[in-house]
Image: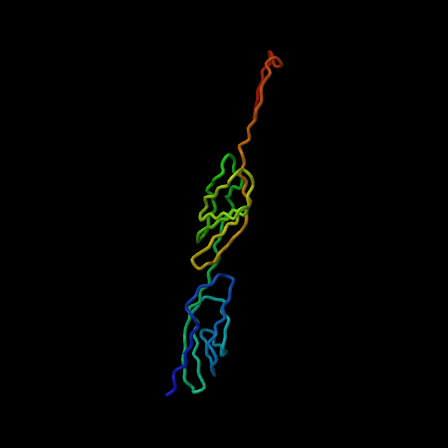
Length: 173
């Protein structure tokens, strides 16, 4: 009695789009894959599904394995309502909707990491931030944006009453 061939395609897995995974059934005499009926040692998978292989060794003994392969999209971030200019503050909660995952932001000037959408800066000015959304499968989307933190402008003026004597003066701002 010959032992049954042992095939291990790996653990069920989820990959980030766009991606492909090569499944290798190992060195045997014959292979029969399902669902696509290939008769080769390796196949490249680009679609969700359960993939099975039956192998036959030189003694005509058969063995097999199945793996579930899933693909998921990277998180999507919506920057349409994001303000990028803030006056009179050095700390803000950014409004960036996403479809899944969690955010990490990095202030690129000093590599400070923020694990949510609350960011702050040490002084007024413009700062580049890298924003990354990452999901439970480690799929991610990221981009870099420029945020401006500026003082509220102040205006100082005075009216010389001797120059404007007997005139009405309307000041609009």
